[in-house]
Amino acid sequence: MHDTIVGISTALGVGAISIIRLSGSDAISIVNKVFDRDLSKVESHTINYGHIVYNDEIIDEVLISVMRSPKTYTLEDIVEINCHGGIATTNKVLELMLLNGARLSEPGEFTKRAFLNGRIDLIEAENVMNLINSKTESSRKLAINGISGKVSKMISDLRSKMLDIITNIEVNIDYPEYEDILVVTNDMIKNNVSKLKCELKRILKEAENGKLIKEGIKTIIIGRPNVGKSSILNRLLDEDKAIVTDIEGTTRDIVEGSVSIDGILLNIIDTAGIRDTDNVVEKLGVEKSLNLIDSADLVVVVLNNNEKLTDYDRYILSKTDDKKRIIYVNKMDLDSNIDIDGDDIIYGTTLRDDGLDDLKLKIRELFNMDLIEQSDLNYLSSSHQIATIKQTLKIIDDIEEAIKLNMEVDMIEIDIKKIWELLGKLIGENYDDELIDELFSKFCLGK
Image (cartoon, rainbow, N blue to C red):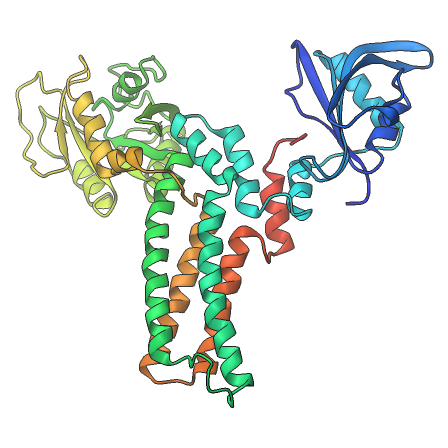
């Protein structure tokens, strides 16, 4: 944290501009060594024209932004060199920064410094990367709300309520002789944790929506060979992503694509047809297809309208019975021989787009997309955040059980402190170094 870091903040390649960013106490002096103007005398938050020069050779004509601490992204001195885009020029300027004392930044280290210096909290930091990676309007809004601090305030308010309880319990224990203090009873704690439980359950439910917006719906299309799985994928994507033939076993490995439905990404995987086969490659594809069921958010089972259910069909239906599932009965242009009914069935034909609108509508219903679309999108969205909320709810269950057993208030306080600490982990008030390193390692360089 005491050295000066440098990184390329724009995508490396041919382009109009590349931005090389430095952060640290020596940022200005390092750039000054190769700039033909004295940056130490310029005002903060100004853009300065000049040249990068090395050994009397002009390397590039640049614009340099100087931003002095503490009014910067990292709360440190920041210098941004706007040079001409191109791999050779960008790398040369970066090389000069390294030669003059800067260290190459790690992925996400600029944002990590912003967090460690108290410029942003952990939820805001995570949403910086979510904004960069957002692929839909909903995911963009979700990330912006996270960066704005709205989600962090929601968690901070809950922590404050827990701290009030802890403080009153401590006063009761340390100053029992005072008659005018609030006496904390188990009934009072029960009432407060009950309200917290309701709020956390709401947050957890909405967090699942947030995860959906951020990561999309992992959808697998599964069924026997030649039932129309690849055609459904192609129709949904509106492109010939998967090869379609009348030959069984054409799809031997997974084929993937994405499409947006109401601002939610549908990450679709077309799988190998489920059947017994002696072909080693196809057999591996079938095994992979079956294994994908467990991790899928949605399973689309495709059946043939003109054939009776086979043992393979029944096996697939039984294996997906506890999943969010839509059964697509294909080939409705042929005489019907299938015997199946249920609320999760869509009928259509992939020769045309028949049934695809019904399929999309069913997906909207299964994942309550209308409600997500109308909400304010102030959600938690990552797996570790959801896991922390679940852990907190488990502790509340323990507190409620302890109250039933009429345990002493000071014993119950231990669990209340655990809740306060767990909520603190969400916003980074207290954190594990390993978690922080893992989170920021997923960022891009220069951010």
